[in-house]
Image (cartoon, rainbow over all chains, first blue to last red; front, side, top):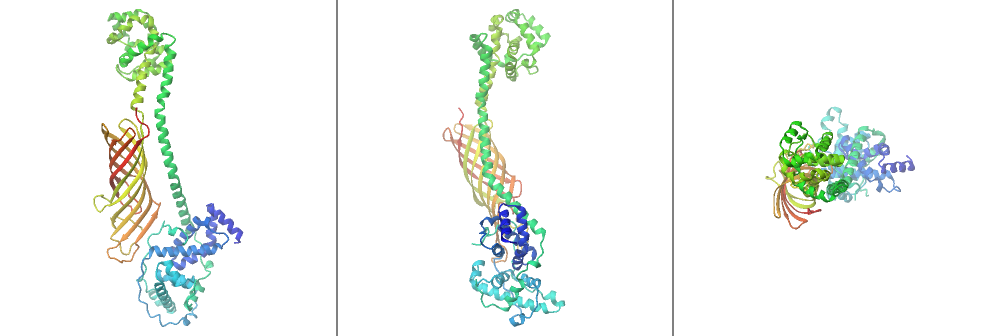
Length: 212
Length: 428
């Protein structure tokens, strides 16, 4: 989509034109969902959070600076709503027993051929606290100080959660190589962990939109 | 943004998860949910933006309605006075005033006898040989008037009983429409046992029949007077505040105290009955056992109890009846219905064991409203401070007719409202 088309679409959305809103939604659906899926534990949760994000986009679009890239702005909003979701629903995390993943070196992982769906499934199986830190650090590229500020935790906790996330992911990758018979049983041993479930977030007006 | 000690692991996931757009299929259901959210938002905005406008319209209607009530005093009087001039002036303007006074004393008596059309009774009257009555009949005017009376039923008002007070009014109205014939028929009506009342007039009836045309006007004046004296509505604005005790299922156990503040417009319908409406902003905190709390979320460990803090716009419509009034003091009892607009709801979950994993708070804004969902009961003590200002003390109770808020609890409230009311127009 060329810039002029996009700006025209944005102008329509500002006027609350439902058709323009739908076109914009469909255009950036894959991009936005891709971000939310990484932070969520399943597709339904991701869709819910993504809609919260688009809701903010449509209600704050008049404040968008059209000289800046829209996609980056949208991506930031999606990340922020995902973090807000985390913050509003997860107050504390339990540590879990990390199994014998320590001995696997990073070098061994380089050879693994894992597709998008497999990787996403692994990330989604992480406890929410670990998943959020892993996403922010490993994929978005934030520092532990920044993550600590965003999530309201200390940089030390951020480091610790990142470490545990990596260990779990290693363990999952290792398990992915185990024959299918055991796969279902061993896939996820962390169900007892963390996961303070989300409350019903329908109608919650996250953080008034854009992160301060 | 910093990249710290990048690991193979991070790279594996970063590269693997980037550009997922082609792999994610579009679901129309997702758009439907978002569209629903957007529609709800628009509705909420509509309500919030319309509230001041609606309140303004309500106040304006109330005031205009009030003006309408005491405007007719002038509107009705003018045509009637004009009518008097029009009818009485050409004949005997001097004597008409006298007759007005006489007949106004006993309007129902004078108007009470429609049995003139009964030939038997008419005959009986003739037999009565009352000199006054005979004088009247001899004057030759009665027959003429009787003709008009029979040919003009609306003026006669057939049907009502002897002392029916509505008759003068009906006759007077008819007089306006029917002119002299109606007036004349009115004159004929006095009957058998009322002869004494008219004895004085009877002597002059033959010559001055038409002067009685002004007679029907007198009862009408009485009617106007009564209307302006008793039915003139009184308008008042009340500003009030109260501590508001809230509890689920009962306000007497585990209750918490909030506050109410607001403004009401009231209008008296009769001397004792008044109606009021307005808006109250309420802070309603309460505690409830988790058993009473309703949520769609499945708690792994249910909280022990929930502390709620709700901000509510309460729009009541109440009717009050004055049961006692002496000197400066009056008491009223009242009831009505309130609509609750839940502006904000905050629920805090308290667990039996500190540190239990689970959500701690839930916030909602502008989602729930309960139109005509709460019953109001109140008793009002009013002390008049001066002709315009009153002090009000109002113990009240609010009983829910529906379940309130996201939590769907039977939230009761009680308190003592203290306020001042200002009479916009005072009775004279």
